[in-house]
Image 1 (spheres, rainbow, N blue to C red):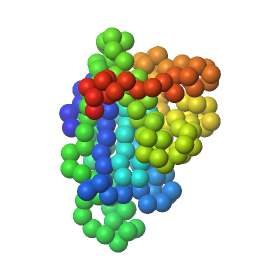
Image 2: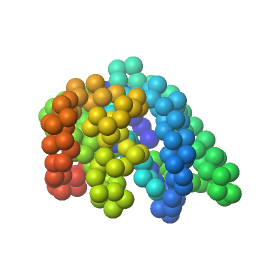
Image 3: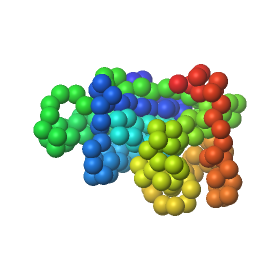
Image 4: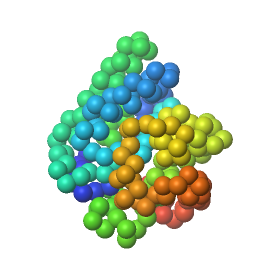
Length: 192
């Protein structure tokens, strides 16, 4: 996974053979805690969603971004989480698919020339609804949607960066309209 400074990335991976990677509430919380210690110091997390068998992050890399520190943190995140799950579930071997994906959506210098970041932001948050896990975006506990909707005051995401880069509305009413926009299938096809 090669990342460079001043870019916006969609990072994702899933369980080997599409198997579950989160088995209990504690697993989701442990993973997020590992993200805070292993990834957050090296990038701005814009949004995230953890699903039973995969995860998504939208991150921005800032001016002094160090790709090797981020890469090492990401490897530590996945390997330490895998060790914990293997112990918990009395299993062995890889939990995640080889080679996590990092899709560069745009450079931060020209982010306003397209809306791939916004489409990805919505796509990530809409995962639980599209998968039939919940009826409303705010019902899924393991995404950053609740933070943006003002339901929870989480500290994982750099919302100021998100507002600046993506033009996400700050007011609750405008954010509700924004988050319920229909995704453009043509744009999604280009991105994913």
